[in-house]
View: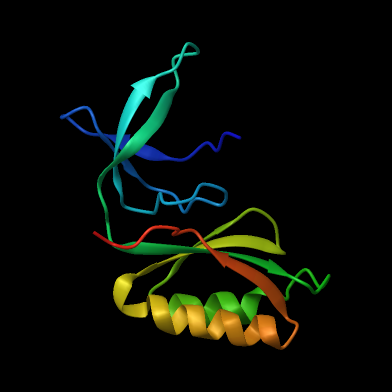
Length: 127
């Protein structure tokens, strides 16, 4: 599976991720990543050079209400999180390390209450 992400190519040949990954694991907003050119000339991430210490969460809301995302999005934005929307029901969240546990706890409570499903984008411990 491929996911196109916005990024900035740096002078040293790495790239900085400027999007919140909705499908990739262990790549987060702000990470400095190693890249190579594919046969189609697209830049492809080959590994993380410098971890930004941001955390990614993915949310799938259970409600069909097209505005159901707004209260949670406002709450997360007030905590300093960034959101990338794939649809009104599915979006990716990026937050810094200081907010990560609080955000995870909130999402866990909402999942337990039947409001949404969520997952974390980090499968590895911080180094």
